[in-house]
Amino acid sequence: MGCLLSPLAPNLRASERAYLRDTAGTELLLEDLTPRDLGLKEFPHLDDEERSTPHRDHALPLQERWDQYRQERERLEEEERAMILESLREHGWVIARAARQLGLSRTGLASRMSTLGIERKPKST
Image (tube, helix red, strand yellow):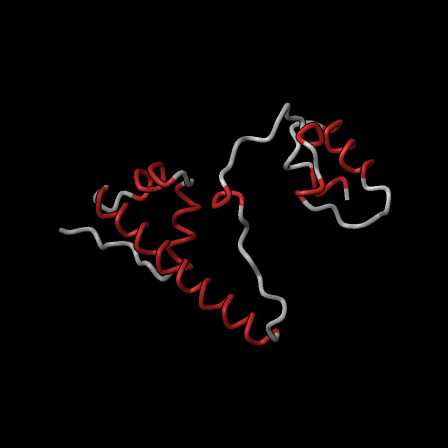
């Protein structure tokens, strides 16, 4: 369980403190942690809207939850596709420049393009 907290905590001791606080052997939730558990003096200020996490209604049947997940995933992929195309057009279809703007590696962007069905623009002669 301590390993799951490692990406959140800036050092091993903070992860260990969080792990040791979980004496019941149950799953730790973020709301169970103190700022010190994460190596912080205090939590950053967040208003109620920012603090809220995506709500998953587990009362719904699995099939409905799955359908909602797929619809959300498709929506996000369309949004990602539109942003990639916008960046490519902005940079004259130079993948390295578009990747830099998006914070991706050139090969990472090429991979996402392939996954999303974006074909490289043919060079004009």
